[in-house]
Length: 475
Image (cartoon, rainbow, N blue to C red; front, side, top):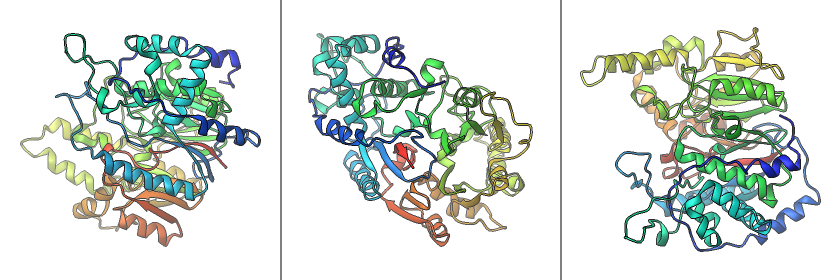
């Protein structure tokens, strides 16, 4: 898809699909003048595309979203989930340390709330906010004058649980704090890709991103080049990484549809290296969970692999290379579980079958979307090595005699702290959660600069620094 003209950009939100969402709205209107002023200064010497030339190019501009709002009831989870483990103050503190590291690297940092308040103000000025709100959230259209970005993202305590005239709870919005902005959109060399989620609760945050891309002054320089909601494709941003101006790396099969990789290759005129994260050919709502709770291990590609330097990745060992298929100590864990009386044998067998296919690569050619016949029967590490990549592993280089103890103590423990889910601020310079000492020691021995911040609270959301950041400009 080419760049959208002004008429298309103004019209693509007019037909938004209805999406229920979950909290009442905040009365506080936050100023957006500072972000407008900053953008006006930048516009005088604004960068032009390619906006992001690679996932490791110097970070110039980025969106983050501090987790400073409650989310209300989660009706998607059994038992009216209120996420009782969340320590919001601790999360916010840890997030602020990450922000300081980003700013220290030289990046301009925007918050999603600022950008969204900017968009709301512009839409109001143009007389279009009420129309957008009525199309997306008709139950709230009468409260249009009180609505702010903070309210749409997760309301203040005093209005968190709305009720009707009889005093009964009135569920209005399945709000999402957008703590993980990488998932709602991806900046490509030519412009923004708006994502679309497997979980209905998160679809609302993608609609907010569409709205922000349409109206926010701070985003007006960036064209929308692919809208997954409009295309009816499921794509989550944690699955996509920009290798260079011609190539994307994309995880498929679990949260992003396999056919989306082919479509992106055709529409964006980019080669797409698709990495299988589960063997299913389709992704559907509701999301089919992986066997034996493996969903959190391979949630997105960036959960397992990210770029840290020029042709250099950090990746979870064993799962993504053919040579290690028979040497993976986790296979012995699954074989043992299959014999346990409380584990269904077929579930363990499904897990073993799934692991055999994980990491397999298909290369879709730019423009045509055809499968590259020269790339077959290889997994991700094999393919990257053939392209001259260096490979670093979660937990450091695994020993040849790695056993079950090593898997749990040396690898899995740090994988749970998102050791591979890092964000590069420039080639060879990354930001990571702490509590990954083996991984960090190995990376530093390879001359990678590793800056850390506390991750114990944030990692419970199954995301890391890569997920916490949406780069707008790199290079």
